[in-house]
Every structure is written in C-alpha cells, then in structure tokens.
Image (cartoon, rainbow, N blue to C red; front, side, top):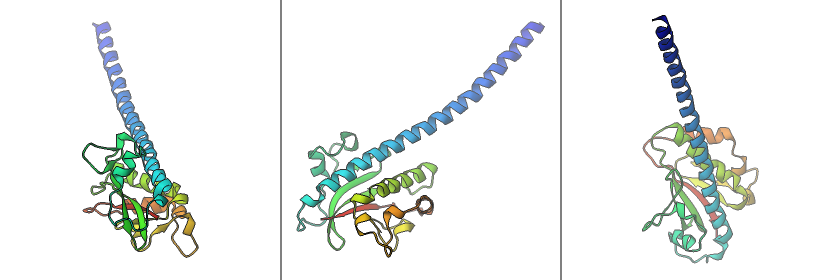
Length: 202
C-alpha cells in the first residue's frame, strides 16, 4: 500500500512539474512568435518604403492627386505577393495593417504610403505594432521627406522631417527617441484609426 501511495504522490508531482513547464513554454512561444511577426512586419515595410524611394522621382509633378499607385508597384514586382489580396488595391502586412501607395498634394506634389493600423483597442500587441512602424520609419529617415499623422501626439502640430531637410528648428524623424515613440503609441486615443503617412516629394 505504501509503495502505491508513494507512486501516486510522485506521479502527481511529475504532472505538476509538467504543467508549470508547459505554461512557461507557451509563454516563451508566444513571445517568440510576436518577435518573429514584428521582424516580418519591419521587413515588409522596408520593402515598400525602399521601392517608393527608388521610383518616386519617376512620376510627373502633374500626376493626378489621389491616384492609387499600389497596382503599379505590384505589377512592377516590387511588392511581395504575401502582402497582396486578389481584387483588392490595398496592401497588408503580417498584422493585417492596411496600407497603400498614392499621390497627393501637401501642398506640393507627393507620393505617399499611408498606413492604417487598427489601434482602436489598447493592447500590448497594438502598442508593439505602433512602435514598430515608427521605428522602421525612423530607420528610413535618410530616404523619405517626412512622416505625418492626423492623430498621433508626436505629429499633431508638425511633421517629422527626413534627413534632407532636418534642421535645429524642425522636428526631425531621426531624432525621435524611444520614449517619444512609446509615449505617442501609448497615448493614442480610442475610437479612431491611426493613419501614419510616409511622404516623398515628386
């Protein structure tokens, strides 16, 4: 009887240890997957930003305002097929952030990439997505003209300009600190979509 009793206690102990290890493994897997997805998003955004940076000077200043250039870049083979959907003129990163490439006037003729991350509900994932987008934009400050947003605190009154026009009197994208990024993404308000716009002048 005693032998059987010890065996049962030992078995329960082993099961408890397995349970604790499983919880730890799941947590570690979740963090690893999040890191993978953030790295993948950065790779996808860099691909799009670099494509626009290469070709924005090829478009005429008289190109119609609001023209969706996403299909053009897709046909040129500059956009990974994983970011496209059939019968849809938008692009989507690994987090399903919607983005598209279009022309605009602000007030000069421009080509821009508009990102629309779904950050309406606060969560750790949304915070990480927002921070990742801004970090990738900062890393590309050398080949973009400026970053704008209608509702992130860092750009409410001024654009964040790229390296070419960065001066002591302007808010420079390359000078954006991790604290600035964290604050902007943390203080993003509920109820609106976080439009983040990366702009190149034609």
